[in-house]
Length: 323
Image (cartoon, rainbow, N blue to C red; front, side, top):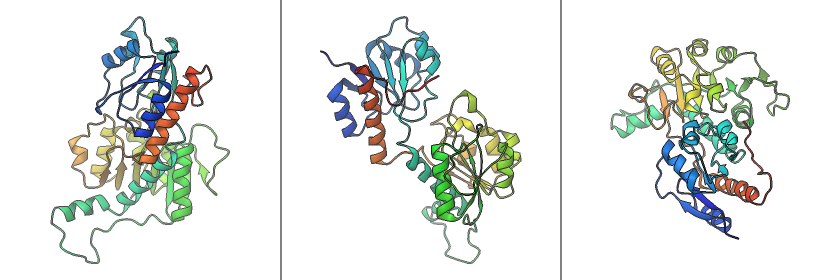
């Protein structure tokens, strides 16, 4: 029996490619370029399965652009799948899977990195040294904030939110408050308190970490209203999806001092980052490094391959996405 054809839309770690080749006839895109809507439509005509990732435009237009498609599976590389119109996919009998779990610790680590960098002005300090403008140590040099013993607010207390909260609580003695739409009954952080609104979390927190899924439901979840509620000196960290925050409102809050600082790994219109945001010294900007450890990216890819293997064996994939 012929192997199913698989398109991998970005270069992958070698173990992932080898595992995929063991079960599929693999074509791997050699360059890191996003698949536009017409590219996605053509791919769904030509391949039995596709391993897409962030930025590949499998929106409604891609599905509507073709009457007949060969593709039966989108095995997404990544936990986030807001670049895929899952309802439209399912209406066209295309199964969608993702790779949760593999990204949890790596993303939480980046959130803590951003907290520390923003609080201690590390990005600003490194730029000063690289520019040759550092004049030497003195007692009031670039005074930042201490996060130990402060209050962490978490927006979205799922796997990643709890991983961030554990690191902050057990590593830095931070108290934790959080907002989630549903009641969280199995919180792994002692003493963590669920509050009724995002604004309440903003008002009670020294640092706020955003950890919610992307998609229309959470677009601009953090708007000017929520930012205006922030406690003086508050730092905002986002490792979720860029459009969860109204980027224009965020820039204004950073410029006017409503927020003391921010740490961002994601942006509203990636890879575009507004010049006004890049010009601000009180924000740390990372190029979406949330899962950028070789072992993590390999694990993600192997999880995607396991979803593909189960699907073509006639089994329910272990990480099925439902609309």
